[in-house]
Image (cartoon, one colour):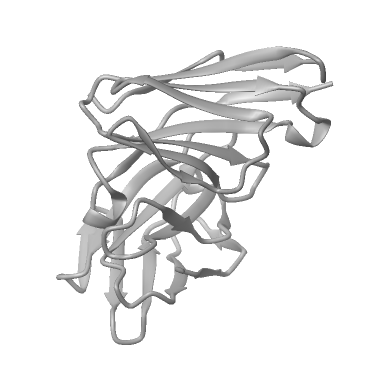
Length: 113
Length: 115
């Protein structure tokens, strides 16, 4: 089955700096990679996702890159703001047409103002 | 509208009680999920329903019993829970299988405390 590893487990940055979170996956058939942000006491919310036919996707200050050969994908947040402080989870589906999303362990991002 | 609605928001129950968690979506999604989440940990999959049939049970203890009465509703029946079952229970839905690149949307969760 799919195994997703996420690093780092915690990340502290100064406001305005960039933050990068990396994930690796094991199942070469996986073809969809979402990123979720979860603020304290709230639901996980999808912030960006990437499908296997593209290498990079950007949405304002957030971008995701995918390297299918190396089986890793990364979340990039530029010009970080205090409201970016949250737990971030990467995920990958188990199998090309599976119905299970396998999550990474999460990264606690703290943006210091 | 990408709303998944869960009730109740909070629940406190004793170890001998029977209670139910409810989840509803009106997006026409055909896959629905129950997750358990402990603080600062990733959501842990419990059950998946696909087209109203149970397709995945992640070896969940029988004190948790899922039910899908129709394509919009998902219930989780709770009986004889243990204190270690205290957690945030999240419901989610997606148009179809996540492996087919379908976005999974989460409800706000039910915060469960077992005394």
